[in-house]
Length: 129
Image 1 (cartoon, rainbow, N blue to C red):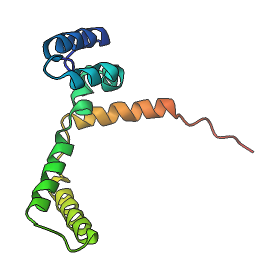
Image 2: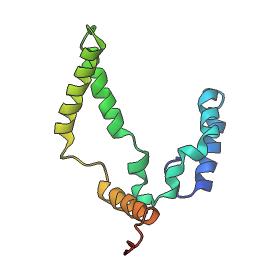
Image 3: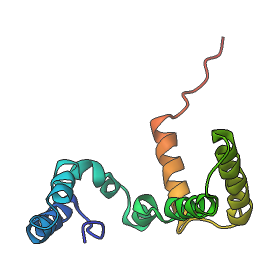
């Protein structure tokens, strides 16, 4: 519920609800959420239509799952370089497989972030010598 709120105040209220409900069962998690709330909800500064693309971890979770699957199939590695090579080959395979796929709503996210970067780091008029 925290991630679906439109304002920080609403998200903060949902954090209170989460804390009340789960604090006894998961004290370290609720403590961590409360301590890092403002870092965890930075995405609320962005337009609502691109937030899911910012806070979702689907792509990184998929990649980690692929790495675990490849490594689990090998019982051991002769050297650390052998493990690194296997990871490299998996990255290359994933790059080929997903090069045509885009993240959810990526075009809007990319446009918004480019605009923000242009505003923040706008080039000043060149000086004529």
